[in-house]
Length: 124
Image (cartoon, rainbow, N blue to C red; front, side, top):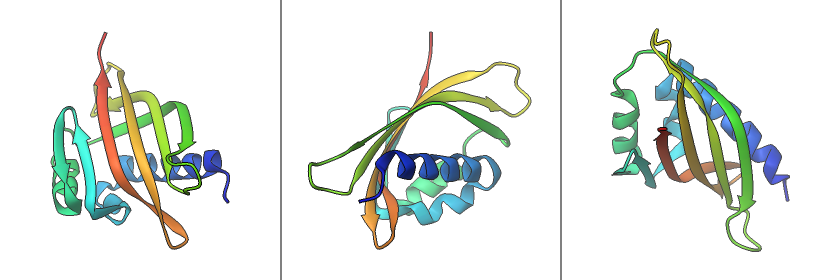
């Protein structure tokens, strides 16, 4: 079994680099059964998820991961839960926004896809 912390790190590195440079490149990470909850709005399936991510109200974004935690999602399974906290800057804004994001990664062949994705800005 692969080291889940290394899988989580490689996944988040790829996810945020792709999100920041070419959001359309995230499509391969989702399936029709995938679900994204973005700030309390549930979105089902790869088409809906990609529509949401491509129409976010900012042109540029930069993520900075501050913490990364990974756990197996079910004993004996190779599915992984990943919790990220971090900071992001959008467009030319001067304010750093805090966020948290949870991914449920499910193995598919030699790779993983995102079954569940929950994103929240953290205020306060």
